[in-house]
Image 1: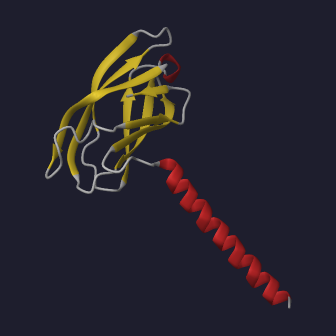
Image 2: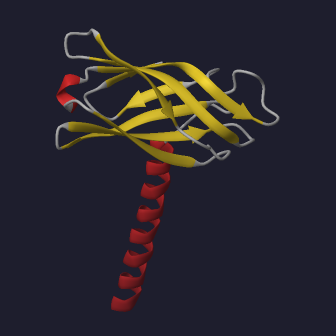
Length: 147
């Protein structure tokens, strides 16, 4: 009888772990079908630099060979502090990718990140604007992300 209880508990724990993993995967990225999602996952101080880590999901049914987004960083006063291009490289269809970028400023000096639009979106078989249309942006940090 004791073994049956142990087996049942192990199976229940396994089911909970599987469910938790599935829920986490859903929570990380829920791009609209046929759209790209960009999530600011973390902001980390590296010396005098700020490293921003993004989780990107291509919700299209075809790969994106290269995605470069014009991005604006705002300081803590709400003023534009940097206009730059972030190269998210290739984005396989239906897959998560993590991309990291370092900026020569403290993370506390970045209040918002604006994804201003796709500067480059190289695709085969997708409509023009595939990187920007339906784009969803989110943040897990104190830094607000707009798109």
